[in-house]
Length: 145
Image 1: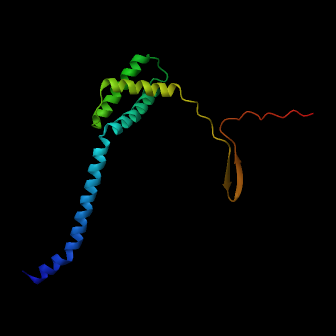
Image 2 (image 1 turned 60 degrees about the vertical axis):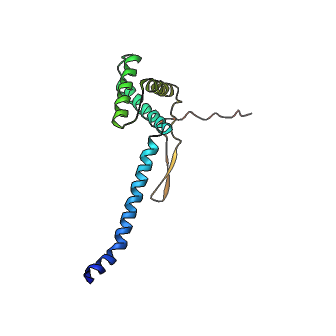
Image 3 (image 1 turned 90 degrees about the horizontal axis):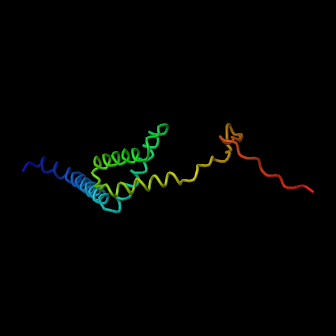
């Protein structure tokens, strides 16, 4: 064999071996994550997250219209089914209906969002008071004798 070719192979073999090893590890990690996402417990979490998003989208879409709960539920069911089909997530209609109902219940019984307390912002080395976006109720004054 040609001595130059032998020297070139000996020079490139460690780099090629390391590259192939890294590629094999990356493929194994990808396949592991793909298999992990197909487990029933993980699919349930994914479907719940998608259902919450779908219900919020349908509620926002019908914010000023009043079509009735059956129409909104059917649209949410259709949207959730199409999203799950595009992501290759198995979904049956009974499970989808239950998850949508749970998301609607969670939205209807969620506590209202409170505004953030006032903040102190440092501008040019001096602290500056930033009032909250909504007025806070006045503090109660203690009784004076």
